Image: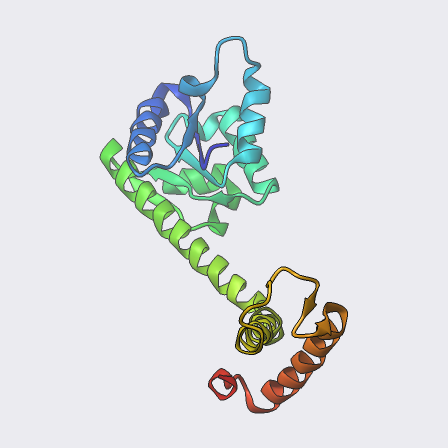
Length: 216
């Protein structure tokens, strides 16, 4: 599965696409360029469709000939329908014509370029920034999912277990720790006691916040 799908019109856009692909490779970002990446014997249309479905970023290189390219327009609309992250790259001097041919361009923050170095540098930098932001958002969502109750359940169960284990070694230093009866009390009864202690801890913590230091 590729990260970036690069859409272009062959006669004026292929060299730009290939240069962008090399720049992305240096940053360990995979990309798809149809002329370069469709294996012999594979159905081109199906391969292109699958790679648009799988990609994370869709980068259309809009040159003068791409304005009238049915393939580029079709790929652009497909990426739009699939709600891909679209980063249009427009050749300097054709912005007005591009907006006329691609009505939806106004919905996106596009990049302008003159040389292949421009498109490689600007598009790669934009993609890297977006990926960093995505990682930040993912971490934030992950933190949000870890609720206080989740922390209590995972940590305090260990606290109670550790307390019981320490008590066991203090009171029964010669006993076998693998036996079914621990400090002369059946394990089933101990499990009930642990649950009661956990509930007591949780009530206290919900009232006061998260004062773990109080339960050393």
